[in-house]
Length: 380
Image 1 (cartoon, helix red, strand yellow):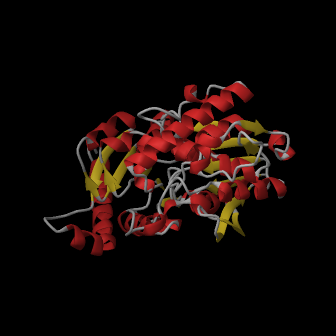
Image 2 (cartoon, helix red, strand yellow):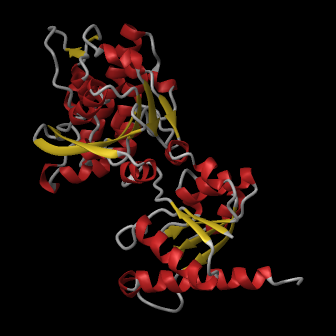
Image 3 (cartoon, helix red, strand yellow):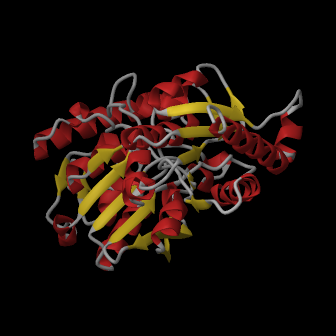
């Protein structure tokens, strides 16, 4: 009997590694001598770098970059397989890096994310994956591209810094100084939204409010994005509003596609490919996945749906152990997950459930393996 454990973390309570530990103990208790394999999993959000380098036996490269407000900040990215790097933009341009009283997408920049990419290229990495969730920015990716040598110019020919407020000032784009190593590299962007750059579903109006944008600020950003898109089309011949996902991370998705010719791909699919999940499925009898709360959204680019679909493709059953179930959780059955087992074992307040997370998960794991053992005896 071979079990593969591949669960997302339960945010704020259980890490993927702790979940693997609890599942392993329960499996050994109910199925003595069984083989267990555990891999931490993330879907392109927080924890993605750690998950990938853990499985691939990679390491982190640490460096000082400029944060969202151009302050010095300590950051890092993952490297593995000798030629590959994985970057979380939130590690350099993330929303938690900006104090609440300074949150304003007119003032923030992705420059630090560009510095991470530039360093990876300088170190010789040519397969670069970039997770773009959790940004504090709405600069259209200008800051990141400026760090890579692109110059954004105003009507007087002066170079712009690459903040959200500069979008409406862009009159010309000079790509002559773009880092030549870009042409040698393959970029994959982990992106699970299809928002265009502009319009009611675009970067400003969809994501700007959570970054500190007032209605007036959002209107200014939208006008700026329209100008930015028009200049890109005029100077570079690309209609960025026809690129699904261009509005992700405040328009960084657009810049990565336009200037780095990146491919946008589901976060969980990218992670599963990087860790060779299909190879891990060989010889596996059951996969246990999960997340803190499963609901209708889990079917769209989250860990359980990605795992379930890979398992279904290989004919391996998958089940999900979860903290809780919300509306539409059963939709996950359409994506290869055979059953859902919540950890909650009685009526309790959320605070109690969080405090007892480890105990409750262990109990659910043991119930799951006992049920599996009972099922295996049917028909004997």
